[in-house]
Amino acid sequence: MYLPLILLYSFVVATRGSLGELAYPALLLGIMVFLLRPKGETFRHLTFLLGFEGFLFLAALFNPGVAILSTPFGAITREGVNTFLLLLSKAFLSSAMVVVVSNALGFSVLLAEMERLHFPRVLVLTVAFTYRYIDLFAEEASRMRRALESRAFGVGRLEYYRLLASLIGEIFVRAYHRSGRVYAAMLSRGYGEFPRFENNLSLKPVVVTLLLLLGVVL
Image (cartoon, rainbow, N blue to C red; front, side, top):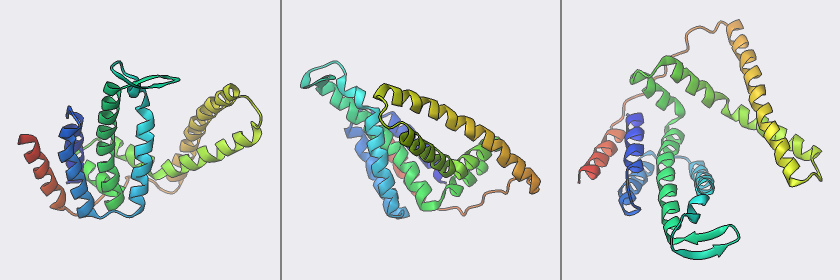
């Protein structure tokens, strides 16, 4: 089962204390990529994920310590670089395992395993609908941002970010109202019990889980 593997893998990665200890989890991620052989677009997603997570942890570069580079924002320290690389590696390995499994097998496999593990039904449905409509949400956000940029030409940077913040709030308001319309449309079409998710059992996650546990023990 892939979901227990993902949860255990994320726990092991999060509890490592140095970059050297992350070498074995990185090897297991490579094994999963070899076994599942995800589509080529998966690696483009991983590249974007690496850049996004790197941006989130930039502040760690300025942790107190021995300065190695001076910047207008402060001194980048040796301790800061080590912390940055450690945080980035942990976040990337954990999220990369989810991306590889979901892109190679389909998100419905993870939903089926959530049901098999007796996750609350409302949680499974919430995750399923979120995944189903996330592209619509992204498309709506992109369309509204283009409209903002076409109407905010020449405004100052501070004013632009103020408008962007209000736009983010408007997106969530629209999402809330649209969810009501979608639910009403589902009821009008006879929506009752959501179909169960089904998938076949595989030995691949069992083998990788055993390798992961073996690495932790040793």
